[in-house]
Length: 236
Image (tube, rainbow, N blue to C red; front, side, top):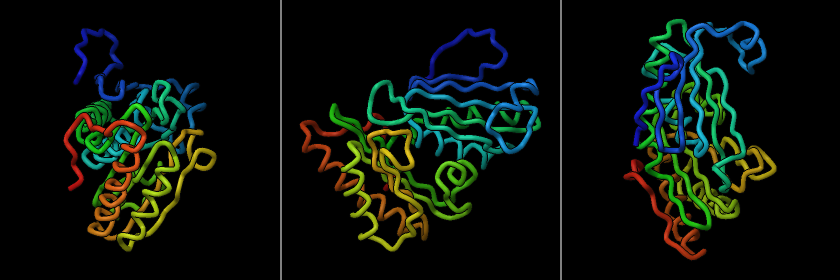
């Protein structure tokens, strides 16, 4: 699913058809631009992961990437996009001191997209997204408030009302900590999604996510078509 490229642009790292995602690295960012970016730390090397479709998968893939490299997530923004669908696109900025570290992190994130899209289910009427990690890192913390080092789960349904029921089912199924619930006017870029963020014991978080997925698949199918995922599910 990666796009072939003969690009001579030095900043280009890679691109994928998955989510229309492109990765880039600026080896020496101009101070005038850096001063206008919404970042808390000033790194001279900036990595960029940007997508039309998908926020959770790209964020989770980047969460994996910063664990494996000497880089740090600086900013995450969720544009109202999905190429006209119900959800978000994404803009993720990371920083590092060495261009090779930053490029590696961007490549690791691109390589991880197929896994993280494994529990994204689409139908003409909407979509579901489930994410899980046994140990959250900087991307999950910055984007969702997940405690670093603890298990984290994301449970999302669109239309947003399906996400409400998915979240209720999830927290009734297992003992987890509710971090937040995002809805069209609260915590999203006015996307038509209901998104529960949870943390806690790894087994409990996984169980809650699976329970939310089960009811979400049934509800979204009531709108006319079975939701399907393009890649194998990774949450078992």
